[in-house]
Length: 574
Image (cartoon, rainbow, N blue to C red):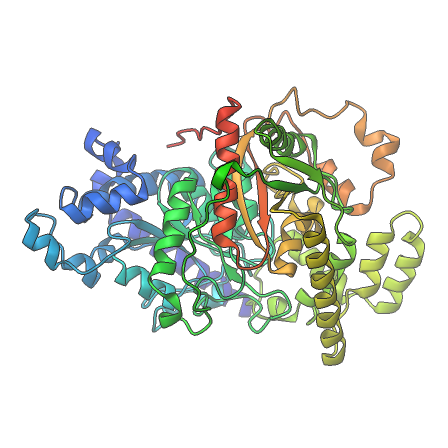
């Protein structure tokens, strides 16, 4: 039967992964030695320095991070492909034997700005002789013939590419789960999700199994997992980071382009990685990259204070108490430093989001629906959206009429979510660009340096509740993908069962009853008791191609939090 093709592909791929684990030397299952703990504690810059000097061998780095990786996978199910053996066989690493520390030997080594840095790859990034599954069984057991430009760059830079990480089937979702690899869980609480679609990479970084994850982002696919797992990430603008050779579940989509969005276990490592990659002139490797060198920026030269605009409510779903408190902590810390923090009232966000959803699903969801093998399941939020798109337009118009008075946002979505003609899609692009112009003007007139928002209205939601929260809950991140603004996420604090609790009768209150369908879904799954101890982040936004500036802004926030006595301290999870 056709469905057996799907089942056979899943079984074969799972056997392959288990065989990779079984073949690992027993040492990877042992605790880190004192020497390995010292290696693991090094910053990216210091790690490169020590390896270049010959005081640390690549095999020692892989040993330390390999142990963390295996422990992370056993805890969260975050890895699709173990590449330990070949990770040390790239020419840049083979040229260094780790045994000689003489000046002559060091001088003869190739320039490797990421020498011995462990880097994991989202299972959408092509690396030769390995699958790029995108979480789908039809792509399993079919190794790609060539590596993407970013992989070639990393190998030339001397990075250790040791694993690929899990994604949900067809990528679009807010939980990382597929028939091919199962569910990936949050390392802080296995009953909760890691987000999506870069869920496996976020879990791995939170557990210390990698220095950098090469993620991708189209509507929050890297930023939401960073928020849920207490790590750092930066989505650049189109053209700033290599993306060619990154597989999408919607190839050809340009209305809201997919971009690369590296993630890291610290802000210092994230900035250093960005700087070193751009320093390698990625436009030589990838024709899609803009030839824009790294810019040195000092935001606080001569004591200048910055102006921060805050979006407390996007008009679709107000942040739940935990996420609002995280944003408030940052606002208070910045204000205490003398920075100006104001509420930003941009052009109507819900209208721009509606345009974005139409662009992403202009094909009626056909690409994601039709790339599955028979019997393969999609995550419930995506499946629900595709089912909505398939409903007859006349029926949706009737439903919109029924709901318009109580829920105009949902009613509008019902009317406009249907497959688009070429002329309709072009019209949407025009409308998108008109909104981009209005946002530019509003930002400029307000004299803002940055905009602050929550990355998502929820902390990491409980496994299996994504359908109730819906894809529309990703509004705070999706918004800045439509605008093509630079956006970073950094962790701030943890959910607290007492401080972040809703009133006991909230779900029967008048306030809840007046919410739109998206907000009701979000608040119906919010539970500060169950979510206690989960990380909470904030999103820091700059204009297009302001990657350097946003990283500096994130540093300003971390400095303010530290001086306020509330720095974020990640927990040791494995």
